Length: 339
Image (cartoon, rainbow, N blue to C red; front, side, top):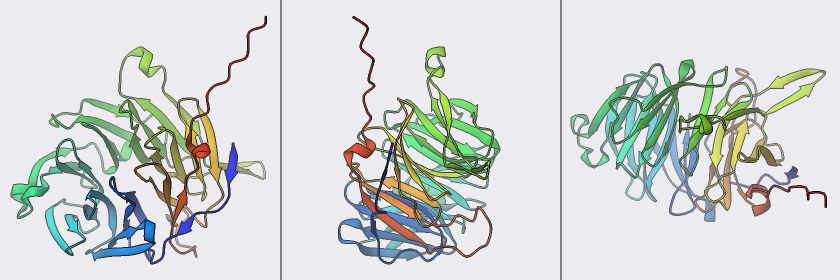
């Protein structure tokens, strides 16, 4: 396990307050960024330029792409918005009763899915953006406030307060397919599905990641495990940091984690190995995203207030070129049997 130098290229015109999420487009090197400064910004990473921004009525807590120039955003003003950058237009798809923490767009279902602190997940049809009664497809009660969501194919994983995890099939949202409890003891920070659709990784505030599988058979469940990360020992004490973000590499299925320690680590989940650690960033890592071909990694260096109000480094977005050696699983070497 080696450390890679250099933080990457820093984007100009970064957000002026906490970065809640960032995501690469599936079609280009466009990057969508949501922030506590009430704005959603679209960057073109290839030219390091800000292509557009929208100002909302409160902190923007999440965003996702629809296509290259449009997407969806949610936040503290309880609204679910569709935003179209090339014409500067926004539509309100609908609202929740409390701030909306998560948004995903399902290409499989053609629906926008939102998760809120009002303890519901709602599905929306973005084609009917003329009134909430026409756009809302369904509302599904959760055991607690929604903290993180992830999609793969027709599967939706919803992680809430109280360490609950609900797994849905988007084709039948009336009941969760599975109701689980996080295998980690502390509050969930992030959940992300494996690109191959077999399970999900879940991180907690207590420097741990759990690797889980959807298949309930004994053989599949025997493969699940959890590991410690984003920790350091100082004067004989273990200092433990929240793991804020998980991002899977689209080609190799290895994944990056970002923590409040300012480090980004790359892991090979199948072989239970850390492949790489990037040199330390100025402050907490609040979000991570690989580009569609896995050749770029966007890193949000943004204090997440885990230690309360204190003077902190300004928000910054770094885009680093990913070297294959950093993300490609290393084949297992088996000892030669004695002759």
